[in-house]
Image (cartoon, rainbow, N blue to C red; front, top):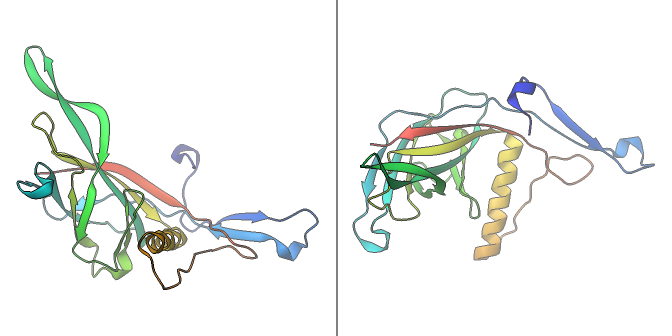
Length: 218
């Protein structure tokens, strides 16, 4: 972790790590290098909308449609985590007011309009990976669903997100990890190729640079 105030990020600068065993020959250095991409915020090309689910096992939950676009950036790969804040009603000066109780809840990813090549969903963490090389442009539509029912004392007028620009190595490592976990959980006769970007050894060195913000939901 590099504090923003202590380091000016230059996407052209290479960060390098070297390691070797004592008395090892110089040419057997284990080496890996990476860069740090510039962060980018998400914007919308249309209003984000919500719809209450009134039937089935998801009754009481809310489905969100996010019409998103990525401004120009030096990165082609991203990681997105969408969540909501949980509110409770409190009596203040004789009036019921909805106050954030300090808790958050990850939103469940439902679908994307350009699956499957552009997006990879994690099975163990609440994020998706985005590869803009597979998008015709930087616009896409994502749908999420609240994990729990939205009570009358709660509200969902904003969703919050963590959006990280990734190096290509970070993206490839995470995709490989996701595929490996899916193979273990669902069973897969095809071999899963693990990712490494280390010379003279096995390992991974990558970087990300993110922003946290919110999107208004109508």
